[in-house]
Amino acid sequence: MAFSLTITEENYLKAIFKVSEKEKKSASTNALSKQLSTTPASVSDMLRKLSDKDLIHYEKYKGVSLTPKGSRMATNLIRRHRLWEVFLVDKLRFSWDQVHDIAEELEHIQSDELEARLDAYLDYPKFDPHGDPIPNAEGKFTIRNQFQLSDLTTGHEASLVGVRTQEKAFLKYLNGLKIKIGTTIHIKEITEYDKSMKIVINNRDATTISHDTAQNLLMKRI
Amino acid sequence: MAFSLTITEENYLKAIFKVSEKEKKSASTNALSKQLSTTPASVSDMLRKLSDKDLIHYEKYKGVSLTPKGSRMATNLIRRHRLWEVFLVDKLRFSWDQVHDIAEELEHIQSDELEARLDAYLDYPKFDPHGDPIPNAEGKFTIRNQFQLSDLTTGHEASLVGVRTQEKAFLKYLNGLKIKIGTTIHIKEITEYDKSMKIVINNRDATTISHDTAQNLLMKRI
DNA sequence: AATATTTTTTAGATTAGTCTAAATTTATTA
DNA sequence: TAATAAATTTAGACTAATCTAAAAAATATT
Image (tube, rainbow over all chains, first blue to last red; front, side, top):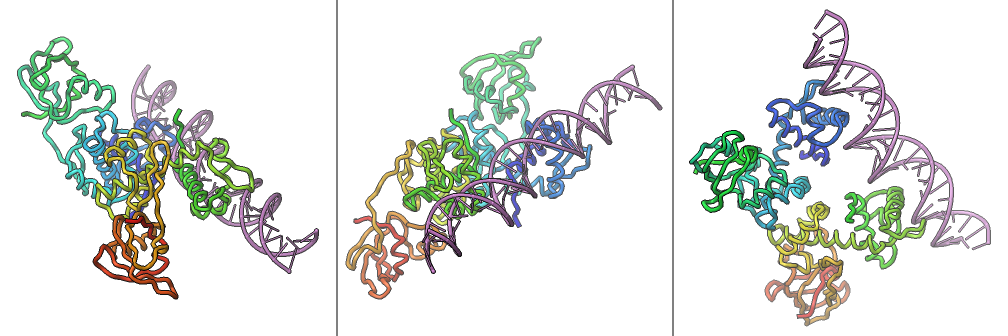
């Protein structure tokens, strides 16, 4: 029996998934309140509710983790979110910095049939427009060999497969540099004192990027 | 300043629009409670709120009508609903009896940009999969010369442009008869006592339909 | 180990949307 | 037109999600 959650409950599950993934351990009340822009008190309340529904493992003062059931629902939301992002970029020609908020709403539309048909219509994409993997219907993520551009040394080149942050300002900055998924980056020089990099983009434009930027670019060998 | 309403408020506006249109006058509390499957008490509460926001004209015990502002919001919801239905049928290959409930959720996604891009992607459709007109961005509906199949006499033929009800059972019945938008119907015979009609569909299959069915088929001359 | 600090939970309130039951207004009909 | 019925509104209560302030537990520090 497919029981359904409120949008708020769904957002809590997603937040728990994200925080646990980032911190590599159970999520704290405080971390969740930050992720969700609510107060810790609200989080405590909701954790009790989600626990009653068997979606999370929760012991007071000990942090939370998802049960298999909660995890399935969270990955399904991520799947829907990323499928909609592909739709918005590939079909409706939105740019990659415009799609997050809209997909944040679209992911809550309740229909397995819609999810399946959208997936087929988009030709079963494995990655979203930011290079993040789209879990399959069973919740499995494709793992990819990737590394930060900042890990590369002078003279080497690599191809962009993803970004580590989706801040709009960052994505727009990349637009300006004509850097997108698939773009080739060649490292010409690394400044020693601040690790900034002189790079060539797609064998055409030369520019210099900060270490911070280089850390946010996920690459694969060509 | 584009202020936004809750999904519930939006649904009330749509209900008021629909009831007023059907009854050709201001909507009563009871009619709205039926349309929305709530109690009259809930409707009274909400009417006060919508009135405070200048979305409806409301005098206690006198029924309600939409203000220009409320009307704009209602027609915009109808526009979005119908655009999504076109998407679901034309692009995702849903059948016309499956799309209402999903569009009912999709219409509430808040993004003018999304609406505009979807419209362009679908090539600015003027009618939805049930033949209902899609209002333009200014809220204007295309008016069409149409009549019920039941108004036609023996020997004449016409082409289906819409349906008067979207009950799933009715739409599925039409699927079974291979009747859809654009289908040609030729009237062979009308039984006098119950007004049932012997018809030929697309110059191929002959069948008999009830007067009730004939009243729900909207046609245009060929 | 005792104290101070941080984190988390509880208590009590608030808002949106809903309900039932009672009160009030409007409409119908005898 | 007075009585009855129907429609509508109000009163009071409930749930979900949130908040602030206070209490309690866990962690860090001296």
